[in-house]
Image (cartoon, rainbow, N blue to C red; front, side):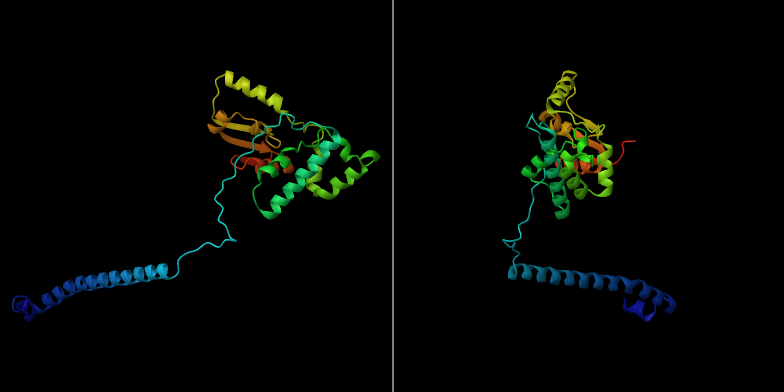
Length: 238
């Protein structure tokens, strides 16, 4: 190498080219060594911090890992009762929905029970009749509770918002099982609050992916709270 550096075997230009070719390799090696040293120092600092300041979770800030489950209907009398009872249940469900949405959280099992009693307005058209003295209080209460758009949608649904009772749903599922259906992709258009999802047999439910569509805003949003594992769209099915 001494001879090469002196230029005795290489021309001066060749020697310069050799040096230019050799030096970058040395610089890269030095850069790698410096990077390794920096990484080792960084890791060492992290380990010291982990020892000096162990991570803790405050008692008043619990970390929730609970996964919300879909609601299961166990009451075959769900939806029964007189017009005033159904009205009160509807109001309670809407107020519960408002609370859940304002707090941006899922419903508890007890809150799901309240939501599930929403039966729509098909059986209670008198609640929208401002000239019905026997329902004047309910008329005012509903007007104050709903937004103008929600009120229009609710009023428009009095002719067709009749939800299927649990007993009828059980009969339909029995027929499906006899046909050999055990699970798969299930679509519920015009789903209301999702009673068909709530009464689905456990074995079928565990083997199925649920999809729902509901045009009415209140009903669709309640369904989303009742069945968080389902894919539910609040829009027209068309």
